Length: 52
Image (cartoon, rainbow, N blue to C red; front, top):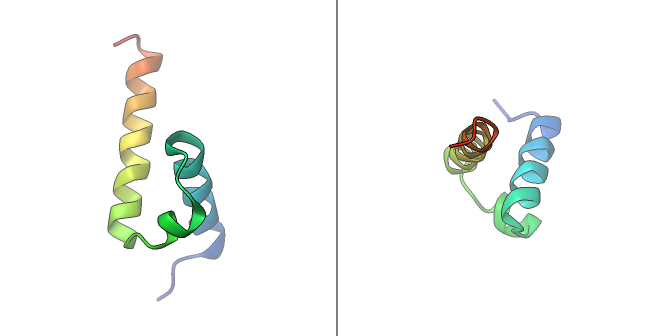
């Protein structure tokens, strides 16, 4: 099974926007690692939004 290209682009854009990493660096990540960064960014944004 392959990972949907649209989802991959969404994750890459999300990580690049917040961490300023290059596309090549992001695409070199394993799926699980890339997904973990997406989750961590979302968690940080939630904390900021809640004022923590």
